[in-house]
Image (tube, rainbow, N blue to C red; front, side, top):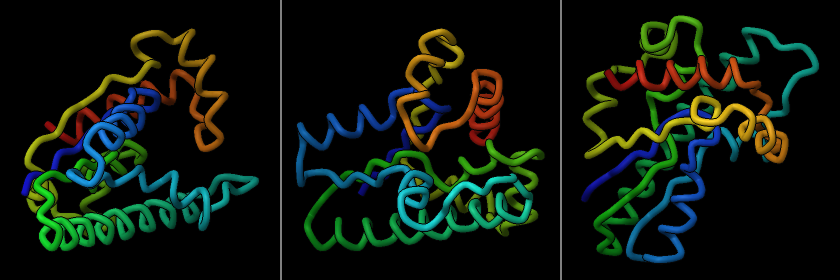
Length: 166
C-alpha cells in the first residue's frame, strides 16, 4: 500500500487536489484530511492571547490525531483492498509551526524523524500562494476561518515545511 503526502504552506492547493481525487477515485483511495482543521472545528478554539502552552497542546493534539487517522486508514485500506492513501500533511509538518523546527519537534514531542519519514511512500510539496502570489493569498486567506496567517507568517511556515523534508 502506498501512502502519499501532499505538504506545503497555507493555500498551496492540497485540500483542493484531495477533494478532486476523492471525486474522481471515490472508494478506490483513502483521503486523510488536514488534522489541524479537524481539531479547530471541534476541539481547539483559538485563545484570546496566544501562549506557548496552548501552542504545544495544539501540536500534541495534531500529532496524536494524525497518527491515529493514518493507522486507522491503513487498517481499513488493507481490509477493503485500497492501494493508495493520500494525506493532507503528515507527522513532520508541525515542525513548520515551531520556532526551532524539526529539532524542536523531535525533542519536545518525541517524534523520531527517520521513523516518521519511513511511513510515507512519496511526499509532494505544493508551494503556498503566499510565495507565488501574495496579493491573491491575502484575498483568499480571509475566506478560510482556520487560517489567520499573514503573508510573512505563511512564507515562514512554507520554509519550515520544506526544511522538514530535507
